[in-house]
Image (cartoon, rainbow, N blue to C red; front, side, top):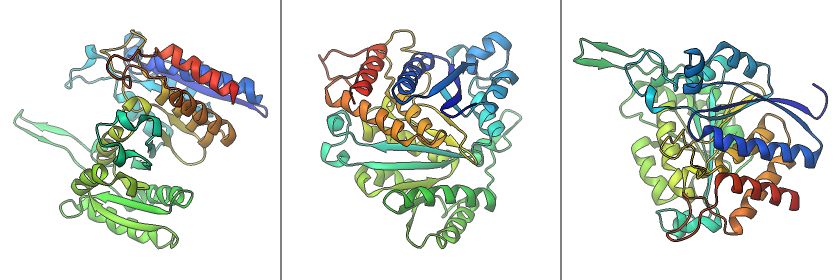
Length: 358
């Protein structure tokens, strides 16, 4: 494709995934109009929607489209009719397949306390004001990619495996990121119990020697869960393994006030990445138009920054989201009791208007 032309794969998925992704796609088109870019966006099936149509959560055509694109904008997967954990095929397998098939090993989940939303967190406003951290989660190793087995219906076994090379490459991502921020990495493990965590801690410490300008702190995961709620402003970059990162990044949503505000990026080597809100498919509210699209819109901003190297455009989207929140607009997940809520579509329109005004 020519200069200023980019192909983006759009995978709406299930539940509210289609609703929030539609708003993020609208914002990307508005960015293209304002900054003179052409975003060629092509849709494909994934998750339960793909199973309905093809029987597979990740059709080969979807994976091929992703591989031929500059980046992927992902909605959510998960459908109650496919909730049987014993089933051989489930919608959630699509994400694991995408991570493996696209070589996505680093998951970045930024969290910040927006001043206008300090009261939305269940924590005291004084605790969440000024929070600005990123969870860097290893994405293709650990217990989620082990070899589970059930023995006679009475005993179940999951395995956790990490190699030194896997830990090294995710550690480099975290330290590079910290250099562009406040130069502090907190590595979270369970080294007092797990052999994988002892290798993790040793390897991260060795990588740290290559970054003498970055401060490294080690924390056990149980202590980290407590400190994240007691002193969240002290954290800059949190580096951790797959399962711990899954849990901790969901915990950090209380700092922002809602999962509906938190974007993520899944990155591999080079610039290619997959971008998605962290909130899931939320089937209980799907189709009602009440979902919060801001996490998907902010995921699109991360796509502009990391995969397309369009920093000014990414900042413009983030500034537009901030302007909308500063103006007092709230979706149902953020609205106070008795306060009218803005619909998903209206929130997307407001961000586009703020983008144009900026």
